[in-house]
Length: 259
Image (cartoon, rainbow, N blue to C red; front, side):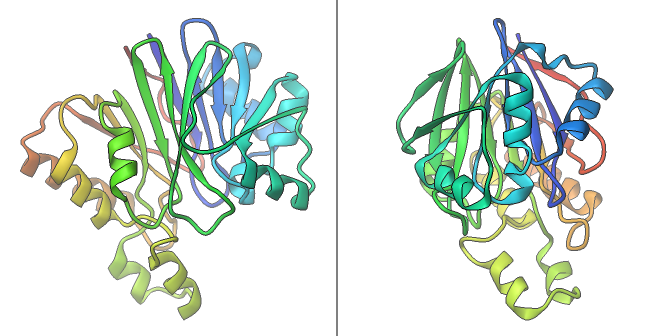
């Protein structure tokens, strides 16, 4: 059995907890050490079993707490070579740093990790597939579109954490400056509700027990819009078994179990 909790998701900080049979991982550490530990306690999760931290990219909302958390837990941080260079520039100093090239599997504690490239305006950003035995978990946030390689990597995941950042109409009508709107809408920006729905309608079958919608913009999206968009797509796909869970910037999700 694998237990998963999204402790925080959004531009204010991101953190995912994944617990397997013989240990646990954290994916992204965008919270302060104090807040990360507070969220874990609120979700009744113990940090004692964490054997490593995976970071998707160097942007602060995903990495600012990696140094402090890794030193507190005395566990390594794994990141792409490009993300590690971003750490150096930003002054992030993990307890231990393990680097990899996207596309090559590696082990971290009892887990098999499969990092794959995603299109985002960062230095070698990745998504992750985490294997605990036969159980497959996928984490994909901060990407401008869903290329075929990303879709192929996440297929078969029993639990998929996928960005659903913005509603295009809300973004275009909103207060962001034109350059920022263009960045978000670009192929190296953030994923829209419509893009998620298109993927769900085309490929998401009953192998996915939980679809967690992540990184919702607090200004350019609404939970009801993100949820209705994907639920309509699941209806069109005739998939009535995948459960959709909204993540939050402020409150951890329930602890979900798969496997």
